Amino acid sequence: MRCLVTSARPYDRVYLEAANAARHDLVFVETVLDADTASVARGFPAVCPFVDDLLDAQTLEILAQGGTRLLVLRSTGFNHVDIPVAGKCGIAVMRVRDYSPHAVAEFALGLMLTLNRHLHKAYARVREGNFLLDGLLGFDMHGKTVGILGTGKIGTALAHCLHGMGCQLLGYDIQPNPECQQLGMEYGPLEAVLARSQILSLHLPLTPETYHLLNAERLGQMPQGSILVNTSRGGIVDTRALIAALKSRHLGAVGLDVYEEEAELYFHNLCDDIICDDTFARLLTFPNVVVTGHQAFFTREALTAIAATTIQNLDDFEAGRDSINRVAGRA
Ligand code: NAD
Image 1 (cartoon, rainbow, N blue to C red):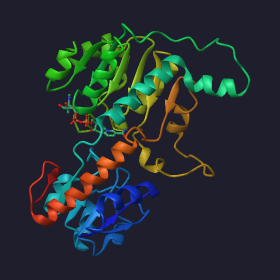
Image 2 (cartoon, protein in one colour; image 1 turned 60 degrees about the horizontal axis):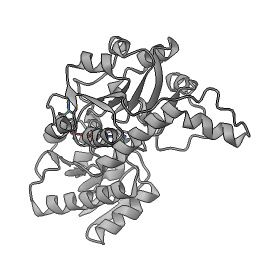
Image 3 (spheres, rainbow, N blue to C red; image 1 turned 30 degrees about the horizontal axis):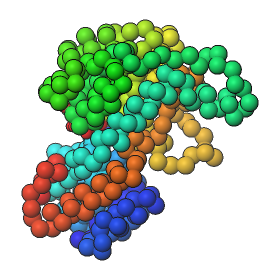
Image 4 (tube, helix red, strand yellow; image 1 turned 30 degrees about the vertical axis):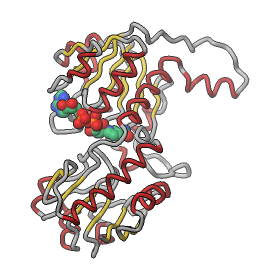
């Protein structure tokens, strides 16, 4: 099947070509899809987008007019695709339902440890010959209470890591997970989890229900000095409210691998450019905030699994087989 791989980075080519073994005709372009660029896919029955490609109604209509019948997403999340419109346009959507939950869970743990033990400051300090410990005081994770919002695949992998470190686990999910309960996780209503969590990690999908779930009121319900880590989707947190909670010193530290307006910034080298997003720029000024550019998934194991599933999705669609990875349309 002819498939256009958009937003393609060199590592996408390496892993997808290895998984493909010349079965499908893959064409790689760096172009980020949106309504202005969608014509690049004209004549391709399949398109393979990443999370920074915007598959809104207008883009999907242009893709459908150009003959596209399948989107094979290189991601778990599909909030960047207008799924009802894809269905109406006759475009099937398949995703990578799971790859390595450990990649994201371990990264979230890394952010917690970085913020708690000030590793980001220590790295710079030692390189400048400053070996003072003042300002680097942290706390033992052992015995601390960590709240996990969303205890699906990634939240559960994180629960295992934290359980191994002796943390007390709180959980919030519409569907409590027995695997987490076996680790001693106590499920409760959102307000109760927020109020008791010394560290809070977000692992919910971005949906209309979870959009700005952490708003000013909910951030205010978190304990003074607590740590918030978001490796899920930026839109779950109201960034302006987050900045207010940092300015008032209510939150102790924040780790963000995702940002609600990240599409303009992430996955590009802007080092010689001017960042015009003042909200993002303000976030970068806090000494107790660590921002990374949506890299939590980025391990060899995850890229191998993403590529294998993406090629399998092309195989399944071509053969007319149904698939657990189907999000919309015929598989
Ligand atoms: P999952 O589907 O296994 O788990 C999500 C959990 O959220 C489920 O248990 C579900 O019941 C719960 N949930 C959904 N809506 C809810 C609501 N309104 N209220 C309470 N609970 C709700 O997903 P996952 O594989 O664990 O991934 C979670 C998210 O992580 C993805 O949706 C994606 O946005 C994000 N992600 C980020 C990266 C990254 O690189 N930063 C990589 C992969 C995934």
